[in-house]
Length: 315
Image (cartoon, rainbow, N blue to C red; front, top):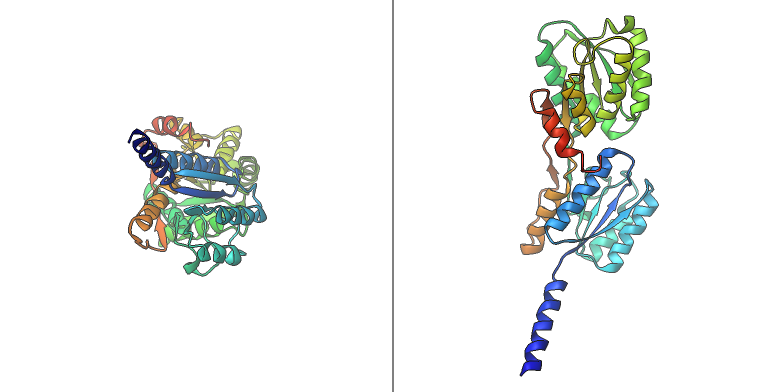
């Protein structure tokens, strides 16, 4: 009898262990602080939910991601999270996952594939992010004339295209606001500084610039340095609004050198795991796109506290 009880207990333990969901996560890489934070938050979310997360870093190469997804399919994981490095070329491997009845959830970027090949996509509305930034600036300047310089993201990338359009939507109808300079800074701090230096030179040493709109915070931080080196006060002489809400922009805001940022949350995994849990529990199909909040932060929103809360996330 004792042996039977022990065997039953062992089977129960093994059954419990086997019940843990296994999720493969194919990440683009770690090309930015935001990307690193997304990875950290995804790992934290998985741990909190008792999910066994199998992580693969693609190092910015699609072929590595395709290989990782095929490996996850071969392992028979319960789901796959995919942050696709590019939009095209996914049909075949997504078909393989579908045939294996493994749900795929896209994180923060979309693919040009039939939506039936993935369960859902979690991400921000990039156009909306730009709109929030533009609307904030319009409210700040009121009817006063405002000449804006724009640091765009990498040419041809969807964030650069959509954040540019969104900002223009946000200032539409405000004839007093004019974008007078616009150039790519490739989403990098160094290029943001270099391009801002050129803007300052072209605009009367910066005296003719009312505001800077940057497609991400890293470019804004570089531009802030250029503004300071030109003898001007960023945040006062030139308003600064950008997108992402990374720790360093909160430091700049706490110092009065930046005015506003629109958050691109790194927590795409929370909504993704919620959707997967409902699907696992009772087959509930989520919406094909789950939009995260694009929250506006200003100097009134405890920027030092926000910095402290975010600094350990891997940015």
